[in-house]
Amino acid sequence: MTSQHKCLKCDKPGLKRWDELNEEEREVVKRLPASADYALEERKALHRWCTRCWHEHLAGDEHA
Image (tube, rainbow, N blue to C red; front, side):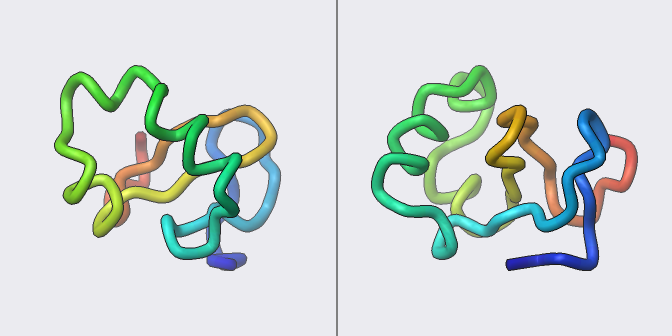
């Protein structure tokens, strides 16, 4: 888990990478609003997710 980062929306520590999500969490991620703006492969490579509030964070963007 990428514990060095915390969610900017709810302060939960530990945003997860795609490979850290379980199957159910991945299904949720596929349905989040960002799926309309980014290809799934790009999201898998560059995005992180909070599994408490489902905020999607673009890696390297500290203000997302």
